Picture 1 (cartoon, helix red, strand yellow):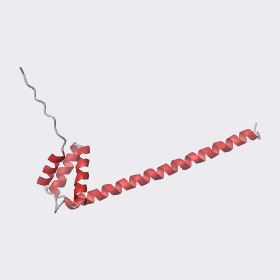
Picture 2: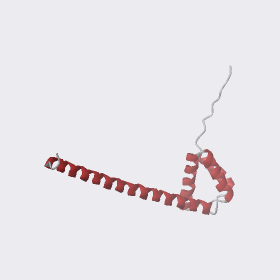
Picture 3: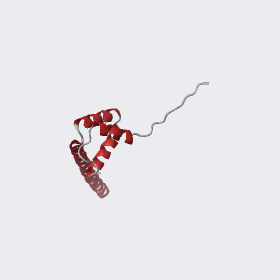
Picture 4: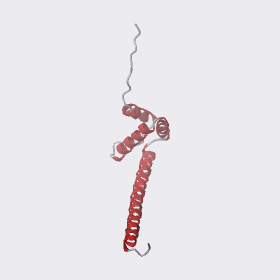
Length: 117
């Protein structure tokens, strides 16, 4: 059966296709790696901005919020970094200011009035 031109051609096509798949996966891996690196750089930059503009007490309060509510904590971090980068933060944010900021950014809590008859 070996020596059949169709079999040889089929094997060549198979190898070529496998090589294309390997190259494509390698390219996607590089893109994912680059995206991961960019995200890590952005997070490091955000942390540096937060360290510069938050007092220790404010940073501890933000970390406590982030531990209990990760999405909300991340949203607050992004907001503080955006405020600092836009120049709207004078000096450093202390714990009381952080408390006020957390209240402002917290989504409206729905209250339920339960009345008994």
